[in-house]
Length: 342
Image 1 (cartoon, rainbow, N blue to C red):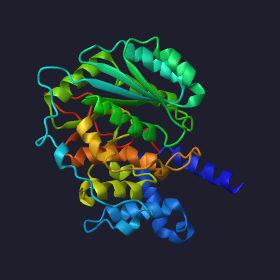
Image 2: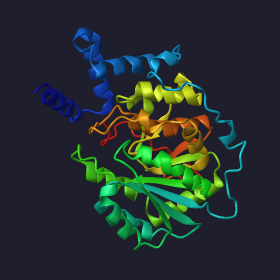
Image 3: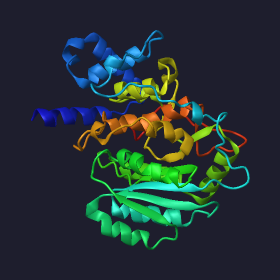
């Protein structure tokens, strides 16, 4: 009964018709006025930590992070635009499309969108899926025109753990640009299907795909391009992930004051330059760091990693932009009230 009531209260809070900023004000009012009622909850502890992060004199302390997690710094210097040749001036960058295919029906629709992408530069699909639907995924892959690679994973770490396991293979094969996708359903939200379709429509049209290849070739400082309208402020959307996000920031050398000013891509689908991704892959994150799958809607390492892509982008001196950007104008299209994110 207690679990049911807690879940009911959380869902009620998430669906209140207030924007994100007002919700944060309401939360702050009650947590400040009645801390004794909430002090043992994870939500309250996370709120306290995010409040600390906002202070100008805040410093990361290794003892604040989960026991056993390494705190050694990651060298990001080889991957910034000034120190590496990460552009191809004459040809479109080869593109690896990495997809975590958890739902075969959504994957079939996704492949139809990929079929119409212009063949400018080499394209290869790197697919992760679960053993239960392996045969149907293989059958669908055999019907599409691009070369592909398929790997099977347990249902662990959402779309993130399979991605960080399969991405090194794409980089080793020389792919400079990666398009990260997954068969998102977000069944816990009434608008999950709308969110997925909107993400796909702002990543996978022929015009957007061609524009992204051109943009990443011509503008070295672009590190991530996310779906227009789905780039949100870190400070408003820590959710239950502030401490783990701080761990990523600490290891990547991102200052707390910088962290507060950053934005990340909600939904974890975007174009990313391989040099931005490499420092995250160098962190040595083991699959044991990822929590067992229990239907969590926030507060897991996978949710924190969603934010860490933006930290790596900043650490390597690249920028996050929207897919509406052009070489003449880099757009951010920052969303202060994202209708799909908790």
